[in-house]
Structure formats: C-alpha cells, structure tokens
Image (tube, rainbow, N blue to C red; front, side, top):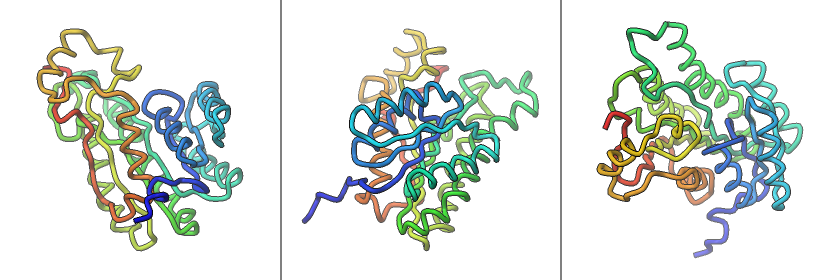
Amino acid sequence: MDTSKFFDLKGKTAIVTGGANGIGKACCEILAAYGANVVVSDYNLDEARKTSKGINENGGKSIAVDCDVTSDEALVNLVSETVKEFGSIEILVNNVGGGGAGKESPYDITIDQFKKVFDMNVFSMWRLCQLVAPEMKKAGYGSIINMSSMASVNTSPAISAYASSKAAINHMTKNLAYDFGPDNIRLNAIGPGATRTRALSTVLTPEIEEAMLRHTPIRRLGEAIDIAGAVLYFASPISSWTSGQVIFINGGGEQTLDM
C-alpha cells in the first residue's frame, strides 16, 4: 500500500473563509503544511495578511483576499482572485459563521437579525459552493468542507437563529453532495464542540468550563488544531470516498453554555 499520497495536497488550491484567526487560521496553516496553496479570506484584511505572511515565511504559498461573505460581489471576486493567482480551486473551507452564544432571545431578536445569521451562515456557503463547483469540475478534484456546530443538534436557550442555521448547513451539505458528486466533488461538514477561540473566550467562565467538562469524556475543551485536523482529512485524497457526512469533533461529549 502506497500511503505517500493520502494527505498530499501539493498542486491543490484551498480557499478558507474567515481564515485570519481561530479555527480558520489553523485550517489555513495545516492545509499549507501539507502542500496546498492557501487563500486566506477574511473581512479583516490586515489580519488575513498576517496569517498569509506567516504561511509564506514557513515555506508555503498563500495570498490574502478581503471578503465579506454576505456580499455576492465579494464572493465572486474571491473566486476570481484565487483562479487568477493559482489557476485552479480544489478545496473550499466554508468556515465563516456568526450569531449564537445565548444572545438570541426570541423576545428581543428582530427578523433582520435572524436573517443576517442565515445570510452569513447558510446563504454565503451555498453561493460559494455554486461558484467554486465549475472550477473543481475542471480541476478533476473537489472537496468542500462546511463548518457546522454542535448547536445544530443540541438545544439551548437564546440561540434559535444560530442553531437552526447550523442545522440547515448539515442538511444542505448532504443534499449538495448528491448534486456535485457526479463531478467528483465531495461535500462534508464538521461540527465543533466548545473550542478555545476568541469568540468562546468572551462568554466562557471557569464555572461554565467546569460544567462542560463534566459532560466531556476527553476532559478538555477543544483547540483550533483539533478542528483543523478534521478539515485536513476531508480535504485530502485519503477521504476520496467520503461525502455527505457530518462529523462532530467534541471530545466525545456535549458542551453548552447553560450547563
């Protein structure tokens, strides 16, 4: 058995949305480490450039592209700039997401706020899938990884917009896998559990963390690299017969803010 190509991403190009920090940054770095050209896409261009610069200084190939995923013009430009720079697109990590964290009381949230969550979390992912699919078909290789959440299957208070948007991502991923599969394009989703990111740090207290760990067999919270490892699997040839799946990376347990 020749295992040398299982995780070989040389000659492949990956777009990572929200790639400047946190889970997105870890995804950019691990894909670059295994040979992919990486487009660090983020609405914070300065931070994206820092991440891209770090990849290049470590021997990788990367560019940064300014992108607000709720702007269709920005999404079209992201794909165009990627092809212009690297000539192809083989991997898409739809990492951008927003909302949640107990801030969505149905007594307070407006319909516009609810819609904004879906614009960012669902509609932008669907549109980018549509935009990159022709490029992946031309390349003869395609892997799209959509970032879901444990919130897609858990129940918690004041999180209905975020949670339902993430549940929509799960089902969208499974259905698009049927649409794009004949063109050798795979779609999978990853549902992180509680992962140490800047966003989690704004709501995490020692008491909440202790409660979360009581429900987590591997008794620690996740790190960004834990999620990036699953992204690497789905992006790589090792998973060439894996599509339409949702995998939860959560230490074997369940973590919610109201524990």
